[in-house]
Image 1: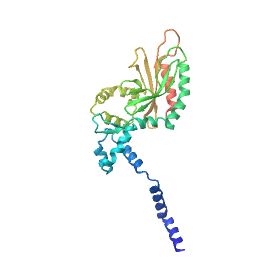
Image 2: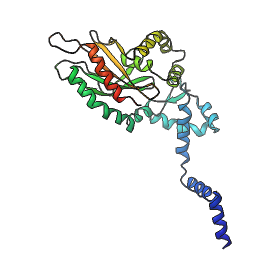
Image 3: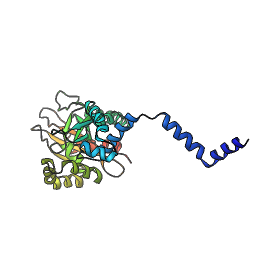
Image 4: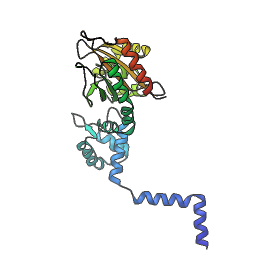
Length: 270
């Protein structure tokens, strides 16, 4: 009876539950997995990467304890090693895996019918682009119903600094994302290019979109509009590579912009 009372008392003050929880946690521990996850979480907050010694010190472990785990993470492409071989940083693999995550799939599923309707009405192709760390990735494409179009492959990685889609993503970045991008580019040519683009990006923010010549294909004008989060930051962009036809009637570039803005408004998170 006394034991029963003691058990009830421990359950009432939570000590029994805590102990049971701890016992369950201990029973299902996987030290090697924990160590690997600790490394990934540590590197996620270090845009410039860390040396093996720095990782070991931050984790309060011996360098030999993290060496094998780092080698496995490199082999599985979750972590990259610098050319000099002394620094480790997260690769793009986690970001690519995240693109398979339901939020991205839901965005694509919602966007595709609207993009197809745009392609039919405008007679132009369009594609959906999401940020991908130091680049961007095309996650959906809708083809023009006509014989002529400019298309880009789904899954293609595009540059942030030299494409209309990339520059629009940069223009509508949040402060945290912008600081992270600048930290990764510190001291590089990308950092200087970003600084030169400052007034241009401000113009895109003020206008709410970008229209301008393609920086890859002569004779094509890119129309790009952001798909915004509730705080007004770009979670993706829609781009139409507008081709002016000489042999057929078509909507003009401002009408195409209006159609794209309507789609972005429906897809933006509010």
